[in-house]
Image (tube, rainbow, N blue to C red; front, side, top):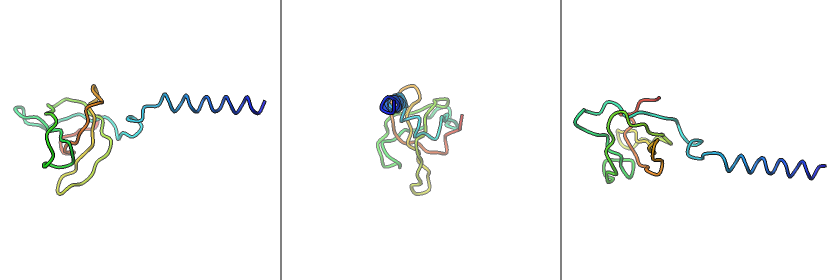
Length: 100
């Protein structure tokens, strides 16, 4: 009986680990890009600073998942992934994010 209970608990634990989404668990939440000029885009960069290459431009309204933020110089940079394409990740300025 004890062994059967142990096996059941182990199976439940493994199932929970496999079904969890690590990206969501480590996230600060969903944010929307806002405050970018109409003729401009928020630059998603390869690292936390303007010296890193631009990965892509993000218009207002794009939803991102923010994972962590750090201060670099006078700007707070956040590590993000696109909500609809989580394989695309980079850094954006916190100043252009609005919590959903």
